Image (cartoon, rainbow, N blue to C red; front, side, top):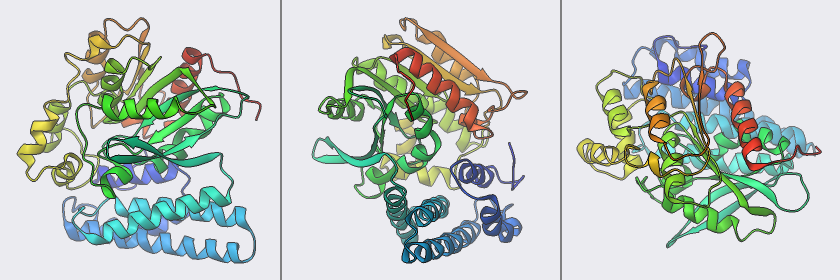
Length: 386
Protein backbone atom coordinates (compact mmCIF):
# COMPACT_ATOMS: atom_id res chain seq x y z
CA UNK A 1 0.00 0.00 0.00
CA UNK A 2 1.19 3.52 -0.77
CA UNK A 3 1.90 4.98 2.68
CA UNK A 4 2.10 8.75 2.63
CA UNK A 5 2.87 8.58 6.35
CA UNK A 6 5.05 5.46 6.77
CA UNK A 7 4.93 5.69 10.57
CA UNK A 8 1.17 6.28 10.86
CA UNK A 9 -1.12 3.56 9.50
CA UNK A 10 -4.49 5.26 10.24
CA UNK A 11 -3.39 8.44 8.47
CA UNK A 12 -2.04 6.53 5.47
CA UNK A 13 -5.23 4.48 5.33
CA UNK A 14 -7.26 7.70 5.20
CA UNK A 15 -5.09 9.09 2.42
CA UNK A 16 -5.66 5.96 0.35
CA UNK A 17 -9.38 6.21 1.08
CA UNK A 18 -9.45 9.76 -0.22
CA UNK A 19 -7.49 8.86 -3.35
CA UNK A 20 -9.67 5.87 -4.19
CA UNK A 21 -12.91 7.81 -3.69
CA UNK A 22 -12.30 10.64 -6.08
CA UNK A 23 -9.83 12.89 -4.32
CA UNK A 24 -7.15 14.62 -6.38
CA UNK A 25 -3.61 13.66 -5.42
CA UNK A 26 -2.25 17.21 -5.61
CA UNK A 27 -5.04 18.51 -3.37
CA UNK A 28 -4.46 15.67 -0.94
CA UNK A 29 -0.75 16.47 -0.91
CA UNK A 30 -1.60 20.10 -0.09
CA UNK A 31 -3.47 18.88 3.00
CA UNK A 32 -0.89 16.28 4.04
CA UNK A 33 2.44 17.96 3.39
CA UNK A 34 2.21 20.23 6.49
CA UNK A 35 1.31 17.19 8.62
CA UNK A 36 4.52 15.20 8.21
CA UNK A 37 6.04 16.63 11.38
CA UNK A 38 2.97 15.47 13.35
CA UNK A 39 2.59 11.99 11.89
CA UNK A 40 4.72 10.15 14.45
CA UNK A 41 2.46 11.40 17.26
CA UNK A 42 -0.18 8.77 16.66
CA UNK A 43 -2.39 9.29 19.69
CA UNK A 44 -1.64 12.93 20.35
CA UNK A 45 -4.87 15.00 20.25
CA UNK A 46 -2.85 17.97 18.99
CA UNK A 47 -1.72 15.92 15.99
CA UNK A 48 -5.28 14.87 15.22
CA UNK A 49 -6.37 18.50 15.42
CA UNK A 50 -3.58 19.46 13.01
CA UNK A 51 -4.99 16.85 10.61
CA UNK A 52 -8.49 18.22 11.10
CA UNK A 53 -7.51 21.81 10.45
CA UNK A 54 -5.43 21.02 7.37
CA UNK A 55 -8.16 18.95 5.73
CA UNK A 56 -10.81 21.51 6.67
CA UNK A 57 -8.75 24.18 4.95
CA UNK A 58 -8.56 22.05 1.80
CA UNK A 59 -12.28 21.24 1.89
CA UNK A 60 -13.21 24.90 2.23
CA UNK A 61 -10.92 25.84 -0.66
CA UNK A 62 -12.49 23.28 -2.99
CA UNK A 63 -15.97 24.28 -1.83
CA UNK A 64 -15.18 27.91 -2.72
CA UNK A 65 -14.09 26.86 -6.20
CA UNK A 66 -17.31 24.90 -6.59
CA UNK A 67 -19.34 27.98 -5.70
CA UNK A 68 -17.56 29.93 -8.43
CA UNK A 69 -18.55 27.28 -10.97
CA UNK A 70 -22.11 27.20 -9.70
CA UNK A 71 -22.45 30.96 -9.94
CA UNK A 72 -21.17 30.75 -13.51
CA UNK A 73 -23.96 28.26 -14.28
CA UNK A 74 -21.60 25.31 -14.69
CA UNK A 75 -23.39 22.74 -12.52
CA UNK A 76 -21.40 19.69 -13.59
CA UNK A 77 -18.08 21.31 -12.73
CA UNK A 78 -19.51 22.67 -9.50
CA UNK A 79 -20.92 19.28 -8.58
CA UNK A 80 -17.62 17.53 -9.08
CA UNK A 81 -15.89 20.00 -6.80
CA UNK A 82 -18.63 19.72 -4.19
CA UNK A 83 -18.24 15.94 -4.15
CA UNK A 84 -14.52 16.33 -3.51
CA UNK A 85 -15.08 19.00 -0.89
CA UNK A 86 -17.62 16.76 0.84
CA UNK A 87 -15.11 13.92 0.81
CA UNK A 88 -12.42 16.16 2.30
CA UNK A 89 -14.73 17.38 5.07
CA UNK A 90 -15.41 13.73 5.94
CA UNK A 91 -11.69 12.99 5.92
CA UNK A 92 -11.18 15.91 8.32
CA UNK A 93 -13.93 14.56 10.56
CA UNK A 94 -12.30 11.13 10.76
CA UNK A 95 -9.47 11.89 13.17
CA UNK A 96 -10.49 14.02 16.18
CA UNK A 97 -12.36 12.63 19.17
CA UNK A 98 -16.12 12.43 18.76
CA UNK A 99 -16.33 14.60 21.86
CA UNK A 100 -14.99 17.60 19.93
CA UNK A 101 -18.01 19.58 18.62
CA UNK A 102 -16.04 20.66 15.57
CA UNK A 103 -16.18 17.10 14.33
CA UNK A 104 -19.97 17.27 13.95
CA UNK A 105 -19.69 20.57 12.11
CA UNK A 106 -17.31 19.00 9.59
CA UNK A 107 -19.57 15.96 9.16
CA UNK A 108 -22.71 17.97 8.52
CA UNK A 109 -20.92 20.21 6.03
CA UNK A 110 -19.51 17.13 4.33
CA UNK A 111 -22.75 15.25 3.82
CA UNK A 112 -24.57 18.41 2.75
CA UNK A 113 -21.99 19.22 0.08
CA UNK A 114 -21.88 15.60 -1.03
CA UNK A 115 -25.66 15.60 -1.48
CA UNK A 116 -25.44 18.84 -3.45
CA UNK A 117 -22.72 17.42 -5.64
CA UNK A 118 -24.79 14.31 -6.41
CA UNK A 119 -27.71 16.50 -7.39
CA UNK A 120 -25.74 18.84 -9.64
CA UNK A 121 -23.98 15.90 -11.28
CA UNK A 122 -27.37 14.21 -11.82
CA UNK A 123 -26.07 11.00 -10.28
CA UNK A 124 -28.64 8.16 -10.44
CA UNK A 125 -29.12 8.04 -6.69
CA UNK A 126 -31.80 9.15 -4.26
CA UNK A 127 -31.64 9.66 -0.52
CA UNK A 128 -34.25 7.51 1.22
CA UNK A 129 -35.25 6.85 4.81
CA UNK A 130 -35.87 3.31 6.04
CA UNK A 131 -38.36 2.83 8.90
CA UNK A 132 -36.57 1.27 11.87
CA UNK A 133 -38.69 1.06 14.99
CA UNK A 134 -39.18 4.59 16.24
CA UNK A 135 -36.36 5.79 14.01
CA UNK A 136 -35.47 6.01 10.33
CA UNK A 137 -32.18 4.98 8.78
CA UNK A 138 -30.74 7.28 6.13
CA UNK A 139 -29.69 5.49 2.96
CA UNK A 140 -28.79 5.97 -0.69
CA UNK A 141 -30.77 4.01 -3.28
CA UNK A 142 -29.22 3.65 -6.71
CA UNK A 143 -31.52 2.21 -9.38
CA UNK A 144 -29.88 -0.02 -11.95
CA UNK A 145 -30.46 1.23 -15.51
CA UNK A 146 -32.48 -1.81 -16.58
CA UNK A 147 -36.21 -2.10 -17.34
CA UNK A 148 -38.58 -3.42 -14.73
CA UNK A 149 -37.52 -4.95 -11.46
CA UNK A 150 -33.79 -5.25 -10.87
CA UNK A 151 -31.77 -7.30 -8.38
CA UNK A 152 -30.51 -5.25 -5.45
CA UNK A 153 -27.78 -5.47 -2.85
CA UNK A 154 -28.17 -4.09 0.66
CA UNK A 155 -24.81 -2.54 1.51
CA UNK A 156 -23.91 -1.89 5.13
CA UNK A 157 -20.89 0.16 6.20
CA UNK A 158 -18.30 -0.94 8.76
CA UNK A 159 -16.73 0.46 11.91
CA UNK A 160 -15.83 3.92 10.63
CA UNK A 161 -17.13 4.53 7.09
CA UNK A 162 -20.34 6.08 5.76
CA UNK A 163 -22.81 5.66 2.93
CA UNK A 164 -21.12 8.49 1.02
CA UNK A 165 -17.75 6.74 1.06
CA UNK A 166 -19.34 3.43 0.07
CA UNK A 167 -21.25 5.00 -2.82
CA UNK A 168 -18.18 6.58 -4.37
CA UNK A 169 -16.20 3.37 -4.09
CA UNK A 170 -18.65 0.80 -5.47
CA UNK A 171 -21.86 2.17 -6.98
CA UNK A 172 -20.77 2.52 -10.59
CA UNK A 173 -19.64 -1.10 -10.86
CA UNK A 174 -22.94 -2.43 -9.51
CA UNK A 175 -24.80 -0.09 -11.84
CA UNK A 176 -22.90 -1.29 -14.91
CA UNK A 177 -23.79 -4.89 -14.00
CA UNK A 178 -27.51 -4.10 -13.76
CA UNK A 179 -27.67 -4.31 -9.96
CA UNK A 180 -29.41 -1.74 -7.80
CA UNK A 181 -27.88 -0.74 -4.49
CA UNK A 182 -29.25 0.32 -1.11
CA UNK A 183 -26.42 1.75 1.01
CA UNK A 184 -27.51 2.13 4.61
CA UNK A 185 -26.15 4.22 7.46
CA UNK A 186 -27.10 1.51 9.96
CA UNK A 187 -26.76 1.79 13.76
CA UNK A 188 -23.17 2.59 14.72
CA UNK A 189 -22.16 4.61 11.67
CA UNK A 190 -22.96 7.65 9.60
CA UNK A 191 -26.14 9.57 10.22
CA UNK A 192 -27.56 6.82 12.45
CA UNK A 193 -24.76 7.34 14.97
CA UNK A 194 -23.92 10.99 14.51
CA UNK A 195 -27.38 12.52 14.09
CA UNK A 196 -29.69 9.99 15.74
CA UNK A 197 -27.43 8.53 18.43
CA UNK A 198 -28.08 4.91 17.41
CA UNK A 199 -25.20 2.65 18.53
CA UNK A 200 -24.14 -0.56 16.84
CA UNK A 201 -25.65 -3.83 18.04
CA UNK A 202 -24.58 -7.45 17.55
CA UNK A 203 -28.00 -8.37 16.09
CA UNK A 204 -27.43 -6.88 12.65
CA UNK A 205 -30.32 -8.86 11.22
CA UNK A 206 -32.61 -6.22 12.78
CA UNK A 207 -31.55 -3.25 10.61
CA UNK A 208 -31.03 -5.68 7.70
CA UNK A 209 -34.65 -6.82 8.03
CA UNK A 210 -35.77 -3.19 7.95
CA UNK A 211 -33.79 -2.68 4.74
CA UNK A 212 -35.37 -5.70 3.04
CA UNK A 213 -38.83 -4.66 4.24
CA UNK A 214 -38.24 -1.29 2.59
CA UNK A 215 -37.00 -2.80 -0.67
CA UNK A 216 -40.08 -4.99 -0.90
CA UNK A 217 -42.19 -1.83 -1.10
CA UNK A 218 -40.39 -0.67 -4.26
CA UNK A 219 -41.80 -1.53 -7.67
CA UNK A 220 -38.31 -1.37 -9.22
CA UNK A 221 -36.73 -4.09 -7.04
CA UNK A 222 -37.01 -7.83 -7.58
CA UNK A 223 -37.74 -9.04 -4.05
CA UNK A 224 -36.54 -12.54 -4.96
CA UNK A 225 -33.06 -11.27 -5.89
CA UNK A 226 -31.86 -9.28 -2.88
CA UNK A 227 -28.40 -9.82 -1.40
CA UNK A 228 -26.30 -8.48 1.46
CA UNK A 229 -22.78 -7.04 1.50
CA UNK A 230 -20.71 -5.09 4.02
CA UNK A 231 -17.05 -4.26 4.52
CA UNK A 232 -14.56 -4.19 7.38
CA UNK A 233 -16.62 -4.74 10.55
CA UNK A 234 -19.20 -5.66 7.94
CA UNK A 235 -17.31 -8.94 7.76
CA UNK A 236 -19.32 -9.72 10.87
CA UNK A 237 -22.38 -7.59 10.08
CA UNK A 238 -23.22 -9.18 6.70
CA UNK A 239 -22.85 -12.90 7.59
CA UNK A 240 -24.76 -12.35 10.84
CA UNK A 241 -27.58 -10.63 8.93
CA UNK A 242 -27.71 -13.30 6.24
CA UNK A 243 -27.77 -16.08 8.83
CA UNK A 244 -31.07 -14.90 10.29
CA UNK A 245 -32.66 -12.85 7.49
CA UNK A 246 -33.52 -15.62 5.06
CA UNK A 247 -34.76 -13.34 2.29
CA UNK A 248 -31.16 -12.64 1.29
CA UNK A 249 -30.20 -14.71 -1.74
CA UNK A 250 -26.45 -14.14 -1.40
CA UNK A 251 -23.98 -12.59 1.04
CA UNK A 252 -20.55 -10.98 0.74
CA UNK A 253 -18.19 -10.49 3.67
CA UNK A 254 -15.83 -7.83 2.34
CA UNK A 255 -13.02 -8.44 4.79
CA UNK A 256 -13.78 -11.26 7.19
CA UNK A 257 -14.36 -10.92 10.92
CA UNK A 258 -15.01 -14.24 12.60
CA UNK A 259 -14.51 -13.01 16.17
CA UNK A 260 -14.61 -9.27 16.68
CA UNK A 261 -13.91 -9.64 20.38
CA UNK A 262 -10.52 -11.17 19.55
CA UNK A 263 -9.86 -8.63 16.80
CA UNK A 264 -10.80 -5.74 19.07
CA UNK A 265 -8.54 -6.94 21.87
CA UNK A 266 -5.65 -7.31 19.42
CA UNK A 267 -6.04 -3.69 18.37
CA UNK A 268 -6.27 -2.46 21.94
CA UNK A 269 -3.07 -4.25 22.93
CA UNK A 270 -1.24 -3.08 19.81
CA UNK A 271 -0.91 -6.45 18.07
CA UNK A 272 -2.91 -5.28 15.05
CA UNK A 273 -3.25 -1.83 13.49
CA UNK A 274 -6.24 0.37 14.39
CA UNK A 275 -8.25 2.02 11.62
CA UNK A 276 -8.55 5.35 13.43
CA UNK A 277 -6.61 7.07 16.22
CA UNK A 278 -8.20 6.94 19.65
CA UNK A 279 -9.58 3.52 18.72
CA UNK A 280 -10.88 2.69 22.21
CA UNK A 281 -12.67 6.03 22.54
CA UNK A 282 -14.16 5.65 19.07
CA UNK A 283 -15.43 2.16 19.94
CA UNK A 284 -17.20 3.45 23.04
CA UNK A 285 -19.00 5.93 20.79
CA UNK A 286 -19.88 3.29 18.16
CA UNK A 287 -21.32 0.92 20.76
CA UNK A 288 -22.89 3.59 22.96
CA UNK A 289 -20.89 2.69 26.06
CA UNK A 290 -19.22 4.85 28.72
CA UNK A 291 -16.24 2.62 29.39
CA UNK A 292 -13.84 0.49 27.39
CA UNK A 293 -14.84 -2.56 29.42
CA UNK A 294 -18.49 -2.09 28.45
CA UNK A 295 -17.57 -1.71 24.78
CA UNK A 296 -15.42 -4.85 24.90
CA UNK A 297 -18.33 -6.76 26.40
CA UNK A 298 -20.34 -5.94 23.27
CA UNK A 299 -17.52 -6.98 20.95
CA UNK A 300 -17.29 -10.35 22.66
CA UNK A 301 -20.87 -11.03 21.55
CA UNK A 302 -19.89 -10.37 17.94
CA UNK A 303 -18.70 -13.79 16.87
CA UNK A 304 -19.74 -16.06 14.00
CA UNK A 305 -18.84 -19.22 15.90
CA UNK A 306 -22.47 -20.32 16.35
CA UNK A 307 -23.84 -18.11 13.59
CA UNK A 308 -22.05 -19.05 10.36
CA UNK A 309 -23.68 -22.50 10.23
CA UNK A 310 -27.05 -20.74 9.92
CA UNK A 311 -26.08 -19.16 6.58
CA UNK A 312 -28.03 -20.99 3.87
CA UNK A 313 -27.39 -18.73 0.87
CA UNK A 314 -24.27 -18.44 -1.32
CA UNK A 315 -21.46 -16.76 0.61
CA UNK A 316 -18.37 -14.95 -0.66
CA UNK A 317 -15.58 -14.07 1.76
CA UNK A 318 -12.85 -11.77 0.42
CA UNK A 319 -9.74 -10.97 2.41
CA UNK A 320 -6.29 -9.52 1.89
CA UNK A 321 -3.16 -11.54 2.49
CA UNK A 322 -1.53 -8.52 4.15
CA UNK A 323 -4.51 -7.26 6.16
CA UNK A 324 -2.87 -5.51 9.12
CA UNK A 325 -6.14 -4.92 10.94
CA UNK A 326 -7.76 -8.36 10.76
CA UNK A 327 -5.56 -11.47 10.37
CA UNK A 328 -6.32 -13.93 7.59
CA UNK A 329 -7.42 -16.64 10.02
CA UNK A 330 -10.74 -14.82 10.44
CA UNK A 331 -11.51 -15.51 6.79
CA UNK A 332 -10.59 -19.18 6.94
CA UNK A 333 -12.60 -19.79 10.11
CA UNK A 334 -15.64 -18.03 8.64
CA UNK A 335 -15.41 -20.21 5.55
CA UNK A 336 -14.94 -23.40 7.58
CA UNK A 337 -17.90 -22.60 9.84
CA UNK A 338 -20.36 -21.79 7.04
CA UNK A 339 -21.04 -25.47 6.43
CA UNK A 340 -24.64 -24.99 5.29
CA UNK A 341 -24.00 -22.39 2.64
CA UNK A 342 -24.76 -24.21 -0.63
CA UNK A 343 -22.09 -22.28 -2.50
CA UNK A 344 -19.35 -20.69 -0.43
CA UNK A 345 -16.06 -19.23 -1.62
CA UNK A 346 -12.99 -17.75 0.04
CA UNK A 347 -11.05 -15.35 -2.16
CA UNK A 348 -7.69 -14.23 -0.78
CA UNK A 349 -5.96 -11.34 -2.57
CA UNK A 350 -2.22 -11.90 -2.62
CA UNK A 351 0.51 -9.33 -2.11
CA UNK A 352 1.93 -10.22 -5.49
CA UNK A 353 -1.30 -9.20 -7.23
CA UNK A 354 -2.53 -6.30 -5.09
CA UNK A 355 -5.68 -5.54 -3.10
CA UNK A 356 -3.97 -7.41 -0.26
CA UNK A 357 -4.48 -4.80 2.47
CA UNK A 358 -7.56 -4.37 4.65
CA UNK A 359 -10.63 -4.43 2.37
CA UNK A 360 -8.37 -3.79 -0.60
CA UNK A 361 -7.19 -0.41 0.66
CA UNK A 362 -4.12 -0.66 -1.58
CA UNK A 363 -6.13 -1.34 -4.77
CA UNK A 364 -9.85 -1.45 -4.11
CA UNK A 365 -10.79 -1.73 -7.78
CA UNK A 366 -9.65 -5.35 -7.87
CA UNK A 367 -11.79 -6.31 -4.89
CA UNK A 368 -14.81 -4.39 -6.14
CA UNK A 369 -14.55 -6.03 -9.57
CA UNK A 370 -14.40 -9.49 -8.02
CA UNK A 371 -17.32 -8.87 -5.66
CA UNK A 372 -19.61 -7.29 -8.23
CA UNK A 373 -18.92 -10.02 -10.79
CA UNK A 374 -19.71 -12.67 -8.19
CA UNK A 375 -22.92 -10.91 -7.15
CA UNK A 376 -24.01 -10.53 -10.77
CA UNK A 377 -23.54 -14.27 -11.28
CA UNK A 378 -25.45 -15.22 -8.13
CA UNK A 379 -28.37 -12.83 -8.67
CA UNK A 380 -28.62 -13.40 -12.41
CA UNK A 381 -28.05 -9.75 -13.25
CA UNK A 382 -27.90 -8.45 -16.82
CA UNK A 383 -25.26 -6.03 -18.01
CA UNK A 384 -26.84 -2.60 -18.14
CA UNK A 385 -27.16 -0.78 -21.44
CA UNK A 386 -25.38 2.35 -20.21
